[in-house]
Image (cartoon, rainbow over all chains, first blue to last red; front, top):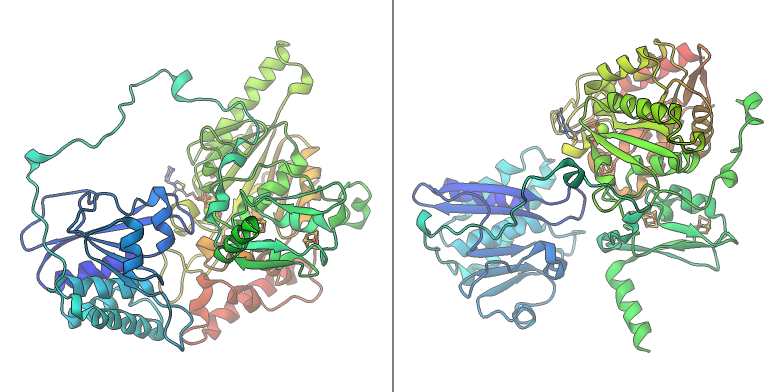
Length: 297
Length: 308
Ligand SMILES: Cc1ncc(C[n+]2csc(CCOP(=O)(O)OP(=O)(O)O)c2C)c(N)n1
Ligand code: SF4
Ligand code: SF4
Ligand code: SF4
Ligand SMILES: [Mg+2]
């Protein structure tokens, strides 16, 4: 998404706009939500910081919609254009989210010969088209400039994805309207919590419990789930429990391994090291669907 | 190795514990080789351990009110974990001398830092701690870069690896600093290299280090899916290949001698190790850089020729 925002920003810039673009990271880890903001205007921009009233929201992964920390709807209004990368169509999302404004989707299905769709370049392409002021050449130039370090085939794929999405959104060219500039006088303090300066015994708190981290549900990070086939398992639990970086596999007294799905991050190291290949990797969505089916029967 | 095997509780994989002390639910990336080594080390060290942790990825282990540890953990600035360890050691000694804690409540003082601190920023305070013969164990999880801030090059980065500060076709122009020899030259109690993918070798070394006193160092090569750019599931494979190619020699310094605890009988070509990692992709694409690959292989060969 950071790359998509850079591409969109550079494309605006080539069209003569003043531009700001900035990423914002939460936790520094794979799979953590990240945010990237682009502001563009014909005049110098005096506003700073994160965008609180977006004209356009691009959601790169539809699973983020249900993640509170991602806050994809924060600040959106009836005129905000939503673009969601999803295989569900726009009507479904409009209904699900109770939105009245314009909602579009980019299908995640790749072209027949490709393994994945490059959604970063594709969303930058679609967003450029929505603006109605970015031309095809500026978009292409911006993608090439941003990705110049990559292998030539990768650059061409991205250019292709960006331009395809740009063309795909032809009917919605210019659907994005310019927001009003807020004057500094209308500035409201964010709703932050005042923390008074406190003595060291309070401000450097101790943790007295042991291994309290197990309460953090890192299992939510998982995109793939390791599933043990107990018929094949040799009960050599010293192997999988040692190599699991996260201590997320425990063994019963008879050496039967048990995966702690509340905490397993889905790295699949256990799948790779299990000698008889007794652990399968199942896409989390498939596993969740299977779980709920089982629960309902 | 064989004459020592009888002294150890860890002879084969089966001897490793199946219940593990380190709590799950930490913020490290999925597949983190550093966390893997730390959880294996913690099983051998036990609960009566206090970690003094310099800024780096493992700072994220303990975030109030959550901790994966069953004992204490203290956070210090990047350059001064050994100084923090000195304070903790002194405080414990004073408490014991004054009879305010019984001897069995004493804690093992362990410094935990990345390579950025161990090979670079923290070397001065480490050197001073060795001079004072501080009784501590230093664990460096070596992910060969400033991982927590986005994998910039560190003094532990290997030649030719691409990092966020060396993005060109030749990668990092410097050479990985020989921290093992720097420590060994100061005649500390113990120095060893380990990696989480070789848990039996690791457990023996931790066991040995834990029984000694004085300055001791364990350097754990820590495959890092995020910084080295590979699929998290490959962490163990990459660690094993680091050993089998001879890139990461498993060795120890004890009683003034360096002993290799594993000599790969037939070394796998280093290419096999490099090829799995995105940080070396520029050695193979868009075209193969034979000169650089040969240079890397030649350095590994020269190391083992000198060692054999
Ligand atoms: C004196 C100082 N400079 C810079 C930083 C910012 N910083 C925090 S973590 C980090 C990287 C540390 O690298 P390393 O020791 O290898 O640990 P890793 O992040 O790889 O776990 C840096 C540079 C800092 N905390 N203190
Ligand atoms: S490594 Fe595989 S076979 Fe061995 S206990 Fe774990 S799941 Fe079972
Ligand atoms: S997928 Fe990773 S975190 Fe989950 S149990 Fe396997 S090794 Fe542990
Ligand atoms: S960046 Fe590397 S060392 Fe740091 S937590 Fe992630 S995998 Fe572990
Ligand atoms: Mg590091």
